[in-house]
Length: 391
Image (cartoon, rainbow, N blue to C red; front, side, top):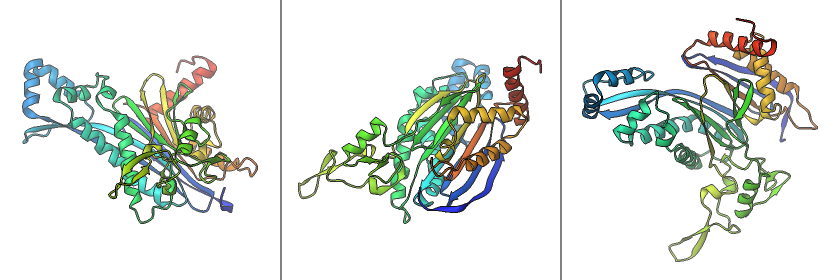
């Protein structure tokens, strides 16, 4: 477990961000660790979609002005700028992420600051590279073709590799970090994960995993590690690292002459082995899961580091959050309860409860206010337990 404090730091950093359609609480606690190595992001921004004005006018002539105006008015936060040969429409995007650092704070801090904006810009560029017809489909709130038009898998994998490459040239690049990032765009939740931080969504109290942990003992991870000349002992890569995907950790990504990777031709015509980044012993390549929001079932999203998941199974944590919502508690109060519970589980035999702890709870309240969401969610949970109470 590394060096630990004899007495935990239980001071918490808990905050609430209330917005029109999505609100979230953030809870952090250092615990027994010598330093707080976790970081997070909660970016709220807009994707700017540019369409040439003459194309918009042609579309209006073909479909009728009423149809076009109606479609545009239904786009949340749409904004048409005049005095230009382009129309610019804005669609909200929210990015939540938890980054569990190890070996220092530099990697988690770097990634939390750079990755969200990199993802936002990459998605925006991908949309603006589409034809005007395809852009219109993206802007149409009734059109469900967004994942077919935007290659989220490629975009997110490229972004993770790009940020990892940037961190390699940082002067303090001797640490590593997991990353689980949840992007909410239109009616979709797109999750990119590398490492053992985790994201879940509660659907009427049942858990749907939005990510899966990357542990060295998993068969696919184990094969990749072995193929790159590494080994797994005591569930750790080369007996050192307890996870198999991460930013940083460049000691596990350097050239290894024992691997079975590809070759490249050097200047002196020598064939030298080279492992592609996605096949490193510890790779930054994320797994991607896309979830279509169901407003009738989906209640909230939880994004947290393994300091939380070591103490709670996914279903148990959902139960705790819903139980406290039914008792009238707010998200910030629930965050504090969960953090206190985790530190109270500290056990030298099992090893749980000693890690840094970071958790984001995202309330999916659409256009109703957060207070209305609290009330409706409370009533729904009570009705489930005691029958319809006709609230």
